[in-house]
Amino acid sequence: MQFLSIKAMTDSLIINARPHLRWHRRIFSDASTAMLWGFWLWLWRPLLSLYGWLVGLHAGLQPVVLKMLNLGGPVSIEGSAVALVSTSSTLLLWSALTPQQNQKPQVNQLQDYASHFGLSEQHLLSGRNSSVCVVHHDEHGRIVRIETRA
Amino acid sequence: MTNYLHSLWEDLLGFVFYYPLFMSYLWMIGAVLFYFRFERNRPHYTHPIKLPNSPPVSVLIPCYNEGDNAEETLAHALALDYPDFEVIAINDGSKDNTAEVLERMAAQHSRLRVVHLAQNQGKAMALQAGSVLAKHEILIGIDGDALLDPHAAHWLVRHFVEDPHVAAVTGNPRIRNRSTLLGRVQVGEFSSIVGMIKRAQKSFGRIFTVSGVIVAFRKSAVHQVGYWSSDMLTEDIDITWKLQRAGWTVNFEPHALVWILMPETIRGLWKQRLRWAMGGAQVLLRNLDVLIRVRQHYMWPLLVEMLVSLFWSYMMLFLTLLWILGLLLPKGLIPVMGSPFIPQNSGMILGATCLLQFGLSKWLDSHYDRGLGRNYYWMIWYPFVFWVINIASTVVAYPRVLFRRDGKRARWVSPDRGVRPSGRVK
Image 1 (cartoon, rainbow over the protein chains, first blue to last red):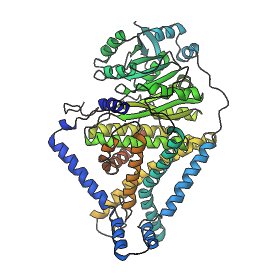
Image 2: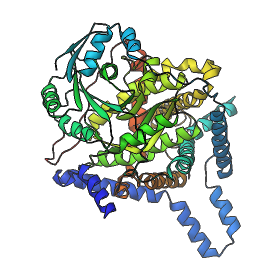
Image 3: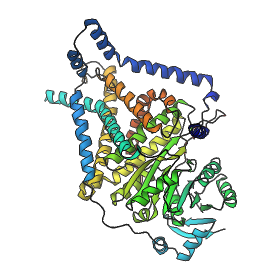
Image 4: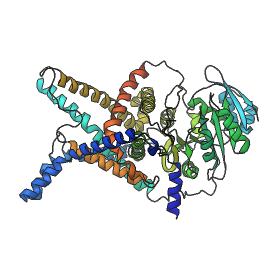
């Protein structure tokens, strides 16, 4: 029941207006996506060729694995794996070298903000306590006035 | 010399093809590490660990021309399952009826406050005004059309309580609009790329950017680093780097959800991605000095990755143009080369990598977003279309940023918000 309620909550937020799209848009996206999947599956043809070779010749496993590992390209599978593991390990070690901060950060007070923005504490406090206010900036983007309305 | 050039050529081809594959596996390793360290033993996102003394929070919602979305966004924010909070809607000089909607709702809800900016100032200045007027130390920023999950605040706030050095926590955006091909591919993209990268970056050190659509900040930290920069097109990337360079910690909390709208037209998508690329370029150029600051060595991996990715984008463009020229010009004028997209028989590795990455991200994000499996049928488009968009936006972004006037205020209008049940784009 809980799963269903979570799914229902999620489903209510999702906008799926696909049935309302024009038919030619839906057909175009469906057909072109199917074609791309066909191309993607075509990329797997070397594996299918190997499988056919293996089944046909009843060859041992080792030469098959060696052939797969050398399917093409300048980088070997072993080299890539070594590069990945060493890069990951290096990054983990590197992040561990970050010096720890010793000081506990300070929480700013109202006067810090008022001073920074060149506003009076009273105006800033009024703004924080108001329900509606207007903030005025100068041409350089500095806050120059806070006008409370409610 | 000829052998050297030939070898260099082969190395370039290898780099262009294998770099994204290498990064994909690196992200997957990092994402799995993150899952086992930070996610696996956590309860479901609908059952957050509630702290005995939950500090109050201020939810900041900058709005520019959000008259159509503000009511729904504010209703969700006001429905937060959290003991003490306020919601501050910042009307950034909107030209539509946003002001009226906000003030009407403020009259009905005591937790809602409205801040009008007298003139449009941009998102960075809107956030700054909101933060100055916020009563509380912990700020949660969302976009004007984003729907905050009721449990998000608990998940975000605990980071600040458990570690006083945390300055920001970024949440987990989920995409609402899934009507078109573009919408559905972006659903997968946010899981398999954005979510995976954030997990990996947190595992390996530092996060490149918080997601501005859902992020919590410690106000004192933001004040210390000078707030959001008004001239940066992606204020979220900029503030992330400012905070981390100042020594603060930025975390990722996958249980803190927000539901967002993304563009579902090519024009809208291009506009958004170009802004993201330009913002990234601005941050890179502004932070290049990190490379000579040994005390900020922890930022080097991020910066190096940005530089290598930039080089990759331009090399991909260069090799693609060369390949096309090779097809058009008489043989012998330029070196013979195969397609830079799928060299030799390595297409199987590309296919396997895509399958693995999409599958892993589906598994990781299925805890937060049901029905993700259905969208993965459309993910086949990602390497063919989104790579092109991302490369093109990167290539276009850098020259634009270099010629952009320094200090020019960053203002932008949100692109389309996707297709609605009427069949029209909003």
